[in-house]
Image (cartoon, rainbow, N blue to C red; front, side):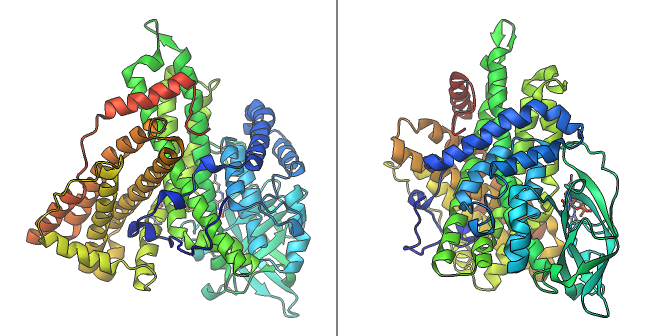
Length: 602
Ligand SMILES: Cc1cc2nc3c(=O)[nH]c(=O)nc-3n(C[C@H](O)[C@H](O)[C@H](O)COP(=O)(O)OP(=O)(O)OC[C@H]3O[C@@H](n4cnc5c(N)ncnc54)[C@H](O)[C@@H]3O)c2cc1C
C-alpha cells in the first residue's frame, strides 16, 4: 500500500475522538494488491478444501487431525506470515497478514488453533526473545514443526491476569528456575511443544515474568480436555507445572516485564480477533443470503419478505461498517509500523509500536467484531428457521462458535473499561488534548444553538456535522463525568460502559463515512449510492444510541440545572436528519439478493 510517512500527520491513538480524518488518508479493503489477493485466495482455497469438509471430524477432535491441518498450513508458509524472513517466515506487512487472517476467521474452532499458534504462541518470542531464542524457536514455529500455547489464565486469575499465583524460583546455582503452578483454559495445550508461561519470581508481584517452557521438561503435565459449548475442535486444557526445571536461558524478556509482554500480545490479539470475527460474519451472511433466495414459503423466496430484508439489510450495514473500522485501523497500524521502521527503530518496537499506539482502537474493534458476529449469527440462524437449529445446517455450529469471542482476549467489559481508561490516562499525560475541545463545549452549551444549514453540495454534509456533534457528545459525557467524579469515576463502571459505547459508535460511524466517501470519490456517486444508504442507516440508529447512552450516563452523575443543561446539549449534539431506513435497508438487501451473497467486499 501507499504509505504517508512523509506527511507525518498520523492520527494518534485515541485522537479520532477529537480530530477529523480525511478519506484520502483512510485505508479501505478495496485497496488490496494483486499479490495480497493471491495470498487471500490461497487461504480461501485451504479453507474450502481442507477445513470446511472436515468440520465434524475436527469438532470430534479426531486424533491428530488439527495437527495435520496446522502442518499443512506450515507447508504453505501460512504459519510464518508475520515472522521475518531471517527467522524462517515470510515477514509480510500488517495489511497482508490481516487479509489472510480475516479469511481464516471462518474456520470455526480451527480459527482459534491457528490464532494460538501464530499469535499468542509465537509473538512473545518474536517480540521479546533473545537472538538465540528467536533462532531456536521461530523457524520451527513458522514451519509448524513446533506447536505452541500461551499460559496466562489461572483458576483464580482471568481478567485480573496479574493476580497469577504460578511461582518461579531460581536454583542456588543460578542456572534454572523451578516453576510451580497451574494454568487453565489453555488453547492448543493438547499438542503444544512449547508453552509461554507467566509466573512470579519468588511469588513477588513486581517480578511477573514470562518463560518458554518445553513440553519435554519434567513436571509439565496436562489436565483433561474441557467440554466446551463451541469451538469444540480447538484443544483447551489445564496445564500443570510441578517443580519444572526451566533453564535460565528460557526466561523471556526481562524479569518483572511479563506484564508488558502480556499486554502487547493482547493489543495485537484484539485487532486480529476483531478482524477474524468480521471474516466469520461475512461468511455467515453470504451463506444466509443464498439460503434466503432459495428457500420458498408461501410460494415466495423468503428473501422477498420485508421482515427478512430488514434482517439482511441490517446485517449488511453493521458488517460493512465494522469492516470499514477494521481496515481503517489496519492502515493506521501499518503506517505506524512503517514509520517506526523508517526511523530505524528496533524490530520489537516496529512490530509492537503500531498496535500499542492504537491500543484504544484495537480494544474497540475487538468489541465491535465480536458483537457484530453474535448479532449476525443470531439473525442468520433465525433466517434459516428450524433448519438453523439443526446440526446438519451451518448456523447451529456458527452460533455455538461465535460466543467465545466476547470472552477471550479480554472480556468485552474489560475492553470497554480499558478503552475509556486509556483515553483518559493519555489525556492526563498530555498526549491527547481533550481539555481544549471540552472547554469549548462548555461554552457552546451556554450559547445559542447553531442553526446554520449544511453544505448542500456535499452528499455527506449532514453526516459530517452529526459526527462532529457526536464527538462533542462524548466529550460532554466523559468530560462531565471526570470533572464531577474525578478519581471516583473508576468506581462508577456503568458510566464508563456508556461512554465506551459512545466511543464505539463514533469510531465505527467515522470509519464507515470515510470508506463511503473514498469509494464515492473512486467510483462516482451513482456507484456509491449503496454506501450512502449504508452510512445514512448507520448514522440514524447510532445517533439515537449515543443519545440514550449519553442520557443514562449524565443522569448517573449530574442533577438539577446542571443535568438539564447537559441533557439539552446532548439533544442538540445527537440531532440527525430523518432517514427512511426501511428503504435504505431494503436497497442494501436487494443488492445482496441480486448478487446472491454478501457483495460489498467479499
Ligand atoms: C475456550 C477458551 C480458550 C482460552 N484460551 C486461553 C489461552 O490460550 N491462554 C490463556 O491464558 N487464557 C485462555 N483463556 C482464558 C480467557 O482469556 C479468560 O477466560 C478470560 O480472560 C476471562 O477470565 P475469566 O474466565 O477468569 O473470567 P472473570 O475474570 O472471572 O470474569 C467474569 C465476569 O466478570 C467480569 N469482570 C471481571 N473483572 C471485572 C472488572 N474489573 N470490572 C468489571 N467486570 C469484570 C468479566 O467481564 C466477566 O463478565 C481461554 C478461555 C476459553 C473459554
